[in-house]
Image 1 (cartoon, rainbow, N blue to C red):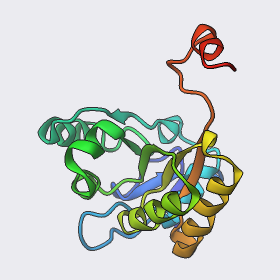
Image 2: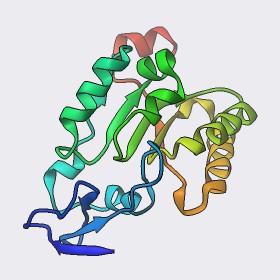
Image 3: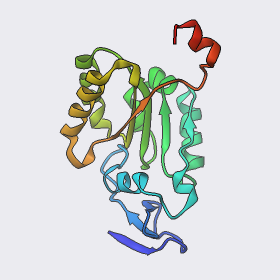
Image 4: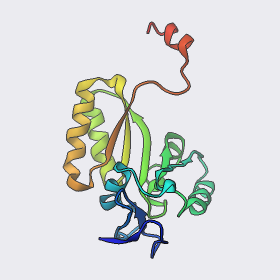
Length: 178
C-alpha cells in the first residue's frame, strides 16, 4: 500500500520511502520480529529519501547499549545492521529485540554448503531483510544458501556475498597467497 509523495512526512513510523517517490507502508507484525516484505522492495530500489539508504551498525555486545542505539536511530535510517559481535553475545534475541525496521544480519556465513543452508533456514524465522555470506565458501555454498532462503518465499532475505573484508590490505592478501 502506498501513501503520499516522499517529500511529505510519513503518516506513521511503519513507513519507508521507495523508488517511485511514494511511501511504502508495511504492517507491523505481532511480536518484535522485523518486517521485510514490503520493505525488501524499498531496500532494493533507489529510495527517494536519502536516509532510507542508511544502514547503521549496532556493533556492541551489550544488549542495553544496542537497544538504546536502535531506539535513537529509529526513523533516521532504512534498516539496522546486527553484526556478529551482538549476535554472538545475545543470539536471536538480539534481532527480536530490535525495533520494527528491516534488519541486516551481517554474519558472513562460511562453511560447507549443507551447514550454511541449515544456518540460513535457522535464521529465516528472524525475518532478516538482508543476510551476508562469505563468497570464499564457493559457488556450491552460495547456491545452497540461496535455495534455503527461497523457502521463505516473498519474505526471503536479500543475500549479500562478501568477497574481501575491509580490514584486509594488499600485504595481508599477499601473505595468504592471493
